[in-house]
Image 1 (cartoon, rainbow, N blue to C red):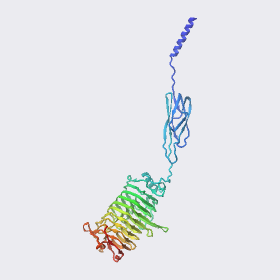
Image 2 (image 1 turned 135 degrees about the vertical axis):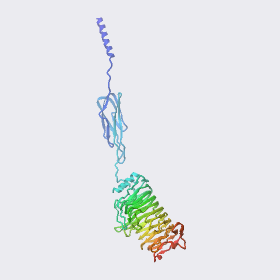
Image 3 (image 1 turned 30 degrees about the vertical axis):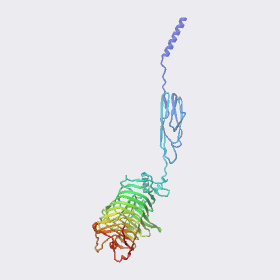
Image 4 (image 1 turned 180 degrees about the horizontal axis):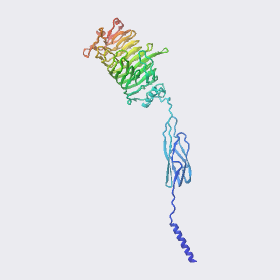
Length: 534
């Protein structure tokens, strides 16, 4: 019996030893979720998201970005799954504030296992009311949008200040533009002696430059027949003020056209305190006998009576400093249909009513080396209803055009036009004996026009012009006193001659002989002139 018991014990001990030597079964841990990612969560008032985590890890833990809260955020493994609720913070401030999309990941870990579930939330794009004002134009992109709005007929209220003006809030660099579509890109300018209204898109608002500068305005323009060109194309009942322009512009016309550095065609428009500087190259007109009106400020200026109310045009307190070069191209005329250039305005007229164009307190500096039919320091031609007052030309001029007209202030003063208290300091020269050249004007051309006050101190260099009737059209005040109401109180200075070496200085004894050609019977209308030096 003892032997049996001993044997049995030995067998049990062996079995136990064998059992203890057998390796334990290894556990394989896993961690899965029912979603591989959570995306496109709403920015504003996002709903809670859920995720089911399945794992046999003893315990697990989840780390979340600071804008996500997980409930529960830890627990024991469950092969049946644990439902985790994700509360996501709003990614929204207000309707008018942009917020960027954001993304991160939920990071689960436990029993040596990890799992990442990407999570992303949308941002908010501000809803911008295109008519809601932002107070002005702050950069090039806003300026470009403003131009597009005008030329597509859309509202411009976005850029209005509290005074109802489109206002520049910064300098604008247009150096990337080799060509330019004007603000107010009219289909037809309405250019003519008795002009009609422009057709198509016209700028009619108020533009305040805020003392800022349009820099690097350097386009070349070929102006199509009947069109108009400038920083602004056609303006009507508009106001443009307090702006500086740095320009280097080349202009050419196909046929009838207007062009100005600031405005091509200014209808019933006020332009005030604008300064233009730089260069202007005039290539003239591709067609003969078609007027091309060009100005340092405005090409064509016009005013009109509507329903008995005068809508005047005014250009005042402007300063233009330009180096002007070029010619008339194919245009060989010297009258109303030639190529006109004026340091301030090229051609000024109205519909022969009581409306007026006022060119006041403007100054032209620089130099003009040109060959075109009419060239003047202030206005190329004052055709009707134009009052030029308190203006000064300091620019020298050399014009080689054959049979042209050249003047310090205006080439032609016609019906209901006047020059008042204007001064020419520029030296004016031509190589052509047929060109009419005068210190203030080339031609007085209507019984209603007049000149009062002012002075000429510039030299006049012009080969002695003698026409087929023996008349000499050159003078320190004007070339031809033809038709006029009166000339009064002008100070006469400067020198005159057919070359630099033969200049004769005005003196108290001879100045009346040097004022210009006066038609028979008109001398009594010239009064109170006096010799003067600066």
